[in-house]
Image (cartoon, rainbow, N blue to C red; front, side):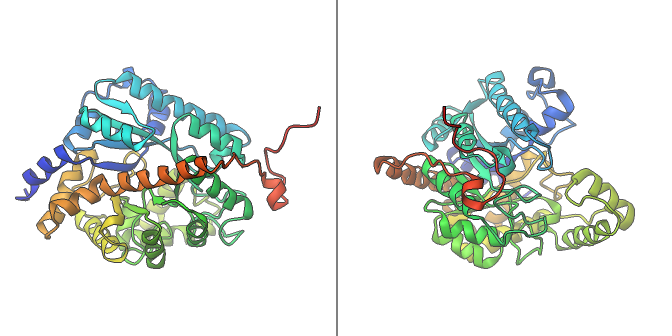
Length: 403
């Protein structure tokens, strides 16, 4: 055991640890039909990475719960499933009021942490969840969603994904309008999952800090899901935060190569590379087991983001319950103190550890709210643009018909 572990545990009692991304709601949907009481998170579970026991052991003081739905759901199914996911998180918080508290502002996050509860925020993972409608985006915000990842694994009509064939070369004009409306609302623009060109376009448009809720450094592990150094520099200039993820393929170069080779094989075998379960089974069958990752791999990413973007622009986003493999030492949500202790052993100060754990994200949230408040004070109104109107596409939404 690291000699720094007691020091880190004491630090996390005083300074909030904010995790940027946890997919427990989708796991609960698939395995338990959203029955939080039947699922019982007050005991240590063998079928999830997450429960209340291990969140407490991990010192997690605030959690963004992902309201993810698959990007290839047809028609209105994505919107319906997103609303069900949002409802599930609200009911999760209601089921455990002694442990969890909903937070839709940074002040509420801080109040929840001070009360000994885990602040619970919502993040929508993929622009497909709004059906190319700014009105739907506003309704997600009204229901408590405080970040939206612009894409998931598939392109949306107005933004390119990191793991799909580029169509737009970044954001369309409607995509830029989505970013502007998120700034006006006070919703984080999340650039995990998007192409590097989409990252650069969004950073050029956004007047508020943006985040990567669960991405690591591309210079350390060459995965399209990771952040190039030039983007880290621009992220820092805008006050944003890269929340380093723990997913094996995104932190281990060997695992990233295994995944890339698998995608090449899948392309010639008719397997959808963005169907995660089918893809994982296909790659294992053809290339053998996935190479393992270690806690030290994650340390390398955290320190690289710190070196390039600066200590004020790095955070943590584990992606627990959203992946089938994690580094040794970070197998579940109880592992955060081990990561921080490893960094303490390398000379990180308490002040820097507190920034990494959650201070940077909370600061960025306050900064984003200030941008939204200024827009409100200036009389900025909800945007009424449509995909069809800006991009000339057959998009959803639009003004109502004349009476």
